[in-house]
Image (cartoon, rainbow, N blue to C red):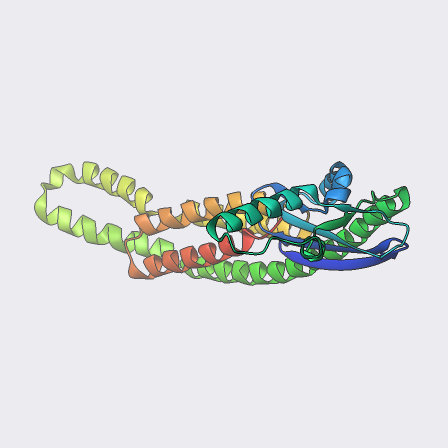
Length: 288
């Protein structure tokens, strides 16, 4: 199975204290980068959350959002948010300094201020366990989404790979004729310009030059890489970095073919190969 690094999953669990909401987002990244956004009261779970995510995922930027909608309870003790209260008092002082006739904040004004009252309840063990269970469930959904996206990428990559095989198939029968034709042209020109006693040296130089423009080895290496890419895509797993390396190898061979080319047909094939390689590389950047 091939896994994309892009995915999204969300879930909710009910608890006697309230409703727990968890959201996971995943995008491509060179390594595994976990970013958590938790309510302060759930910070004690951060090591466990990181451990659970790390045990299931290998690469990608993972954003985990947890929120908790607490039920109102008469037994809950409400406390003043002292930091926010201090900010309000300082603002009140600034306003009074600038506008002496302005009215001071009343107790009612302060009590009605958003987030000025807070209920201090630490999550119970069963709520912590519920959070971990919800995370595992949502991770399963995220991995399933990444797998579905990965299968789509696999189909696209195999199609592009088939197109590259067609290009090398087109190039292979052209090579002997192109080398022989170019060799004849150069030989004719040299024979007109050089003394016949140097024929052996000319032939040696032509053989050497012909070997430099022969792209048969590059074609063979390309086909070997094609086989390896197909094997990796079929086998699946965490293969993104391996495929990215093979794209570099394909690009190197395509560039060599282009630099050796002495015929427009081969040059066109080299360009088409590089276009397909770049398209594949863009897709591979999103594979785990």
